[in-house]
Image 1: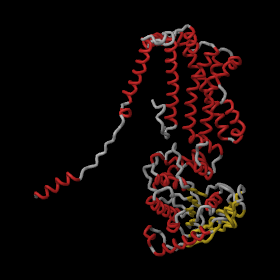
Image 2 (image 1 turned 45 degrees about the vertical axis):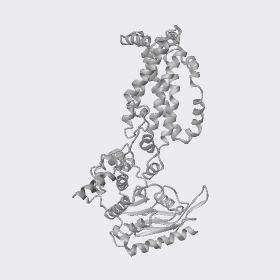
Image 3 (image 1 turned 90 degrees about the vertical axis):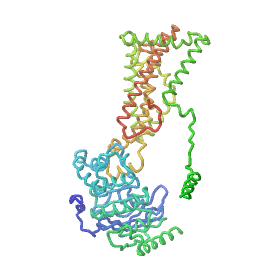
Length: 269
Length: 288
């Protein structure tokens, strides 16, 4: 492991609040739908939080508000002591699709955020770091390959690198592996856990899969729709590092059942 | 031992491999070279028959041999730098200038229409309105405005070729998906960065499709311009030959002209393959 990559980016001690949402509401003016109602949420440095809920529960809206892509109607979103008023450098994002650009090689795709923010010269300087990151996610040797030649899983690994290259304080993950098959998905989740632990990253994952949420998270935010709100925050006290074997333990099953019960109740409303 | 052997032979008899008989229709199995030659021979053969049996007057349709002879004559004139080469060069210049103009104007308007709400709301409707007009009908106007020289032909050629490039560019700028847009937003990209680093490269295949359609239009524009506005280009040679009922000459001139069109198309195609190297064309159309 390279020391530089493992640097604690934000400088805040592990366990200190990084992301603070207070009383956040979002009403879409177009159809007066209350997508989020009075959401209070704190992400602690180095923690892994998942949000789960049926469609329409506002989890995508929550993620977009946190990412600074859309403004909240009410409330306060603070990241590392500064209010979020737009896209920020200390936020890294990853989507369901890898969205690598086919005219750039893997490594050029990874330094793209640097190129956008600091120009071509800075991007060239970041190449070494991009190579290290590719090494970390197991894509050594694929630096100069175009995305057309990468498999779905490899493309998502590359997009993890692109997210990490700017050393974000918080990772916002929007169902990053849901387009992959189940085997690759389990593998990528373990990979994600390892990277988050190594980088001391604060992660926030939107998912549809209860198992995925439980195996990865310290906290699971269960949301309910109409209006989108937090129903419960479930603590997962399985030891770390998590392994796929844990999915067969009674404790794991208990937590999954509990969350499934909550979500089923939500459906009845 | 004997039993085992019988067993084996029984196995061989009972368990048979499934044999697939994949029938390929004869018409689909003919190799490309043979198919192409066949069509060519059929075409020329029919042509020869129709003319040699006197079904069609030689003034209307010359024999293939007459046409070939004339092509050799025209070819010699072109190769020895005769007056036809001068004419051809004029037409080529019109095509190149017209094409360059169409690309410059078409691309700029395409960006305006595809990138800005103003362009989409206020410019696009007028472009569509003009595009539906028969553009050749503007030829007399261009002659009146720009005279009988090369300018009026360049203008008509550019006028015809501009629209597909506008449409291709505008469509290309809309080709980027939601994820790519969101990604650029999260990276804090400016509008200009999003346009240059993401939307334009994403739209290049569509832009090139527009340019290719434009390349065909620019030839038609230049020749139509010469038909209607005089001058000394290849179109004028065709017009004169036709008025003299020299049909073999008309045919051979058209064939040489088509080589220019083909060359232009292939140049665009080659450029596209170099520039948009990541994009594989799905349809075989245009792959020579």
